[in-house]
Length: 329
Image 1 (cartoon, rainbow, N blue to C red):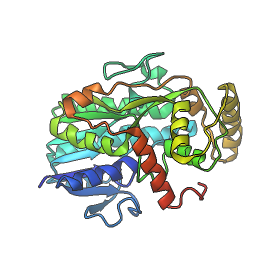
Image 2 (cartoon, helix red, strand yellow):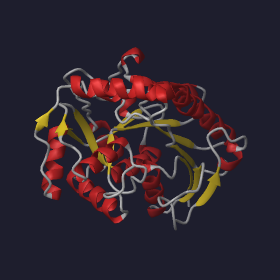
Image 3 (cartoon, rainbow, N blue to C red):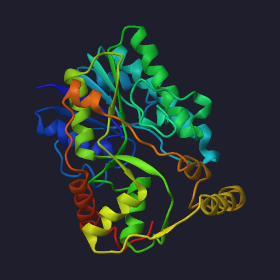
Image 4 (cartoon, rainbow, N blue to C red):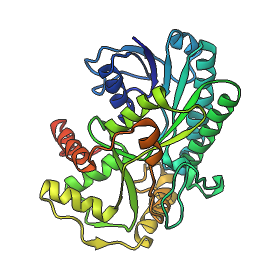
């Protein structure tokens, strides 16, 4: 029975990955910083308390066949740049070093399509790379720099496969993610308008399967986009409207409106200690359609492509069952 060490195990992708591995007969060691919470409750996993910089990380990994490095600090606030870089770049370097010291057979490093960037007006695949300076904000830049750490470790002899999930939706989005937060705002009737942008969506359980398949079938040193369907934001809201009976927002906002709100939120109120509702970098990202081609992962890994519509339905059901439709975060 193979053993996996999973960082970020209590997060959205991590919690689904842990379930995927358990379903396929793996033993799992889950690295968590605090209490594991509802996402891991009742699962037969070994909880390892600590963070990416724990002094005995290599000891905790010893005897593992795989390290799945899922943990990352996701934030679009510029003022958190230092923390983002420390967690996502230095943290990745620490995990890779520990995996090498522990003699782990293969590391699957969770990057993001954020690291790839966008092709203006076109669909990007693994061969595309926006320059670091064109990646919007510290989060996207940190994900590319973390990939650089993974490639460096690969060059030094560590077996590393990189996966680049697009935008996952589905159950166990407990925090929730920014995408989950957008779904919740729609479900609560707090989404009066939309902006003209687009995303690539995928069932989070397919992302989890993609991680396992990358361990089994991925080529060392390669990146694989784990995505499925490209949808405009308007099309996404129309899907949600069909699923819920709630009306889709009809008003399309020019980007200047959220841009102005974000500027006040982040540059004025943020300096007074308020956590902004809208991040400037989030609005800047919305200027481009974030569309991706995941055919390489489908072809080489056998990445499943379950219907995004069902993942959205399951996401709504999960939020409802856990009382998130009525509570505001």
